[in-house]
Image 1 (cartoon, rainbow, N blue to C red):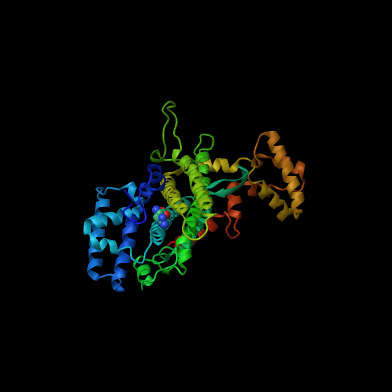
Image 2: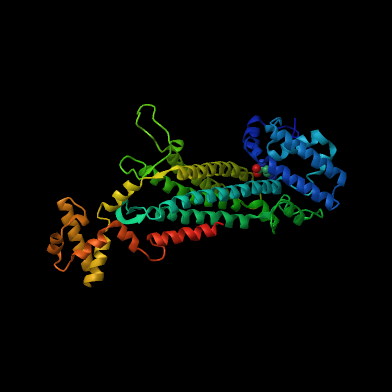
Length: 459
Ligand code: ARG
């Protein structure tokens, strides 16, 4: 039998393989609520503009509410023969209310319908990412405040560089995640134009009111070009792009948590609630949540690449290729939200091991730069010479098997006779971080100022 929606043109129905490759209902049923919201706005507008009778619009509205409750209640029978969520809903509406259902699609196409549904769905995800990031930033601020002055090693090349504070390290991620937040918010502002009323591609001859539907669906305005409205998916790509960068940040932090929770580092203890054990090794407590967050960037970035590839060769306007947009965004969104929530939980629950952090902060000649700076400041040495003298002292300490503060004054003066006992004041880790008072530096006062700025921003 031929299709109910376009049977006029067709004598035969589709091959089973055609149906299988064509159907999207298996995944786009996730947009049922958005589809019904779009249809309700469209029907109300059709009545307000006199395009359909108010009584038909009433029947459509009631019928759509019935269909939605069937879907929410799990009793709705989805059919692959009806291809997608749009035709599944409309066909069921016809069964429920009869003839008026056939008037709903006046001045509309599935092309503007799907663009509208998918924008509404994606917009919700932008808001969910926003909320997830705000929660994560809150957890980081709590950690930063607790340990604003706890010293820890700062690394470059994962080699000890200079001491920093725990609060400073947490606040570095607050900066990164806040930029992610900004990207999601920018994307939301840019995408919030309503495609509904673009119809198939050219607009419609019916006297529709696009401002009315745009407003009803929470858009700022109708999209200005009907071809563009049904053709582009840059809003989905912006979501995926912002999600990819955010996932990259999550992954870097996850990598640090994996390293920090190891027996060799012991910088943090993850809570039991966010760890797993081993089925064979009784001592194990594994950072699986962090590892999975680290892995999520792969599929999210993959989704971004996949949709870029789908879109890059398409002539205007709609092509069926674009049906492949949804699974990428669905999967990326699901995994991003999970990763954000898991990271927030891990950060809230984790304990920084202050003593291990402090011990590590003082090892690895971490205050060598402070020593070089002292030679410049107190002895008036050019920095390059100070660098050389300090390097020689580090080599001497390495030979003796001790750290810089453990060298004697004789050791120091053997390398440079003008060094005095005062040098030992700058070799302490606390002194080192306290001295880094430049704007944005690691001195606890600067870190506290950062925290205060962000708490204010997020109010
Ligand atoms: N299921 C389709 C999609 O997801 C809906 C739009 C179909 N439009 C069309 N002209 N075949 O893109």
